[in-house]
Image (tube, rainbow over all chains, first blue to last red; front, side):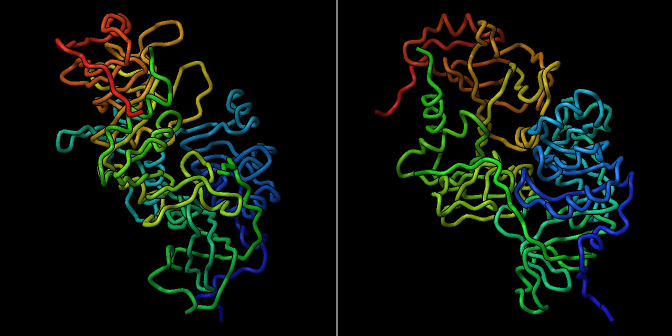
Length: 232
Length: 220
């Protein structure tokens, strides 16, 4: 009896069921807190025509950037892209559709998707190209646009520690979009640095309760730094 | 003389108040952190989910899991808090951040701002800028007063696609400090040695010039 044990034995098992044409929501900000091994597994499987929802699209050769190499992504919803040459090339050649989305709206779309809220009004983007064609309503004298929630076929998440039941904690600013992504997947897969026994994590310190999580796996991480800034 | 980038940051820093939570954008706004006046405590918000950003790390402190919204490695100060992106933008959209400082390509007399997209050039995205300008009550926009070719960036109406509508109330350029109110720029201060005439000439939008326009002052 597995009960609440969400552990899977391999990355292959972790991404079992992903198919071409699916929507994948990914946690991470830049290269910080990205599910790097789950992304690598998506590349290995060769599925394509994916819609990816992520704040950024990695860099050349790392993170979501590796899914561009075999043109596995057809559409991406992101707030900031183009840190990678391959992405730029595919964007200019219309090989990838980019739906630029304000960062807070992107986070809220995921949060709403996971919370069963189909859409929400926000002042963000009103009067800009982002607001074009969207329903407008005025609340307390402010113009707001209607933004729809996002649910993914898969959500891929990077945590720090988890217990076998899928309760997850994040480390420092590697939290970012991960908690929202975790709620918004029909199948949510979390990879972590360490899996512990139930009871070892302080219940009030859990960021993502296990109810949102379908599969967990322990991995090793490169954790590449995008902009290394130090003081002497 | 037009202000240097450092002097612009220094002038913006004079607007900081004790106990302010502040979000600084990339570029000149980031430099404001170097000029926080003595005796004042401000908490820097970084929209990737950090309130209480500290200095850059030493080699020993370097941690891939600790970055700011510019994706630079940073540290946290005592009393910092770390949270999700949704929580971070709840602070921003809910109007809890006391001051936002960000750059722009153009600003107009209605308080519209264009800062993220130049048609025909590669578009990388707006990041958190649209959320910040829509959510903040108190925004200072930093920019050069005119382009390299002398074309004003303070316009009657923005020509580039907007980042936000009617949301900017203060602008600091390399020539002047201005407020935007009731459909006009109001000249509040000029950079040391810059004439009112030069500012008038380089402001395309409606500009109200009071009888007396003081020069900015800088400590040391």
